[in-house]
Length: 61
Figure 1 (spheres, rainbow, N blue to C red):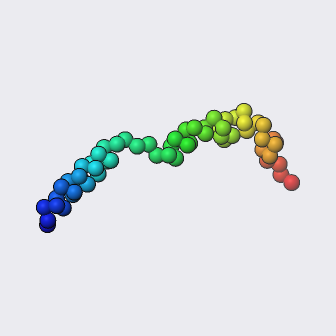
Figure 2 (tube, rainbow, N blue to C red):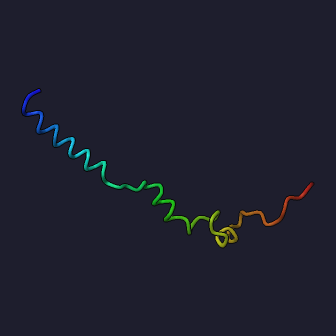
Figure 3 (cartoon, rainbow, N blue to C red):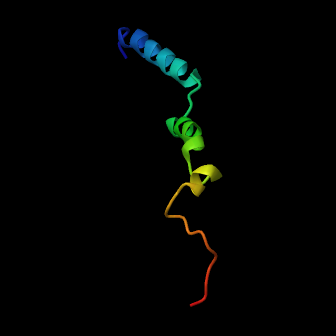
């Protein structure tokens, strides 16, 4: 290995260690938590306003 490659590799390793130490939150978790109040399955008031929800119970024909 050349001496010129070693400092570059050390910088690369330091950069990767720094990136690994960053706490990240998945964007899907953020999106789900942000849309909970708009979800009709989790918010009963929105489910009542849905015209396509069946109002009655199951009926035998």
